[in-house]
Length: 147
Image 1 (cartoon, rainbow, N blue to C red):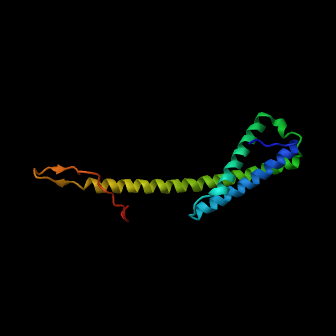
Image 2 (image 1 turned 90 degrees about the vertical axis):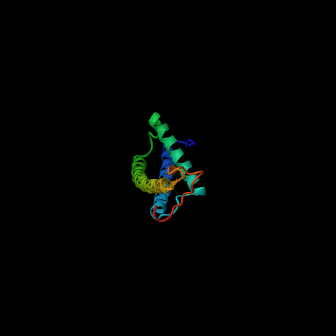
Image 3 (image 1 turned 45 degrees about the vertical axis):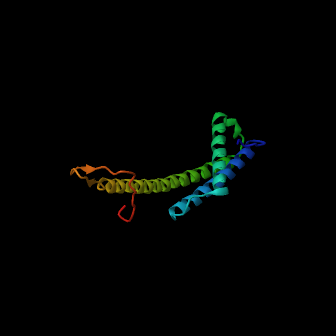
């Protein structure tokens, strides 16, 4: 969704609004993740995705054609740079929080896989010929506090 602006000033004002709202949503989601709560969902998640796409598309358009923001008041452009810096800081913190969640989740999956392997590896029994026999069917995995 590209921005529809009357002039460069209007375009920069819209970008300021998008940047500020996106930074607020990202900061809120980061706080939720750090508090061990689920990330944004529903309307807020949709808004975050929509704003992120609009922001990305508009920056790509401006990169291709700098005239889209030429002529905007220098004070607005300075404010846009400042808010963009804040957004980048919040995105970096968000990435750190998501990386921590990913690391914990991967650790849990690894621990469960190792526990399942340990349980199944020792589940064999000796048969009538004195040889270890394989399990006859699927063996249930019991995941408890040892994982």
